[in-house]
Length: 187
Ligand SMILES: CC(C)(COP(=O)(O)OP(=O)(O)OC[C@H]1O[C@@H](n2cnc3c(N)ncnc32)[C@H](O)[C@@H]1OP(=O)(O)O)[C@@H](O)C(=O)NCCC(=O)NCCS
Image (tube, rainbow, N blue to C red; front, side, top):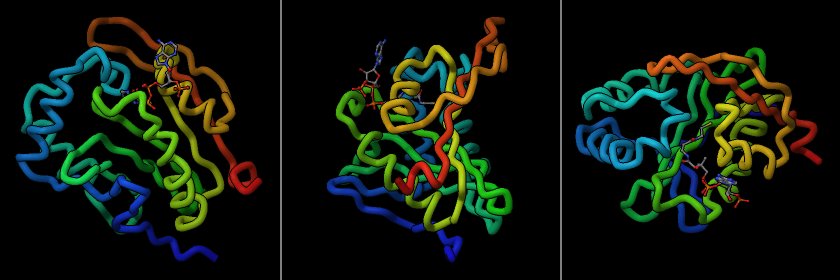
């Protein structure tokens, strides 16, 4: 039986996964990463931009905050002192045994197989530590990079939710839903 505990920190080769400190410095860093690559982040941000580093700080201190109900197992990806991105689980529902996987990398960290390397570790947190039975990846249907991550790592395309998101520019976007079951992961 799993102990329903998520690790505080995980080391995978040269990468350390640990929560991003909710400080103005890291908020500014993430703001700058987004500001320099708005096109690269458009899908994850649903066509919006962070307006300021303060908005990022608010996200770090509220929506990603830890709590007893285990809604998040969300980690910064660090190589030495450098923050490369984030990866983890959100929407954790221990009772229903499901969660969603999310991830982002700054532009210079993409194309090096980092997510492929770290995904199995996050799956282990979900399926083993938290005893979940299903992990889902939701991404904009046009987000080729993210879809590729899901497909390459054995997630099944469960369907496309039509016109699920409305962006500030008025465009509507489909969402692709991928899933992996614990029994598929165990094989
Ligand atoms: C999703 C993300 C983390 C993947 O990073 P990555 O694993 O380093 O990979 P890349 O972004 O370089 O590309 C992913 C794959 O898609 C492929 N790809 C990317 N754009 C492509 C395009 N336009 N046409 C065809 N293939 C494409 C790449 O070749 C790569 O394939 P591979 O894994 O077989 O090498 C990264 O793209 C990212 O941070 N995007 C912004 C945030 C985001 O959208 N997160 C996901 C939210 S659901």
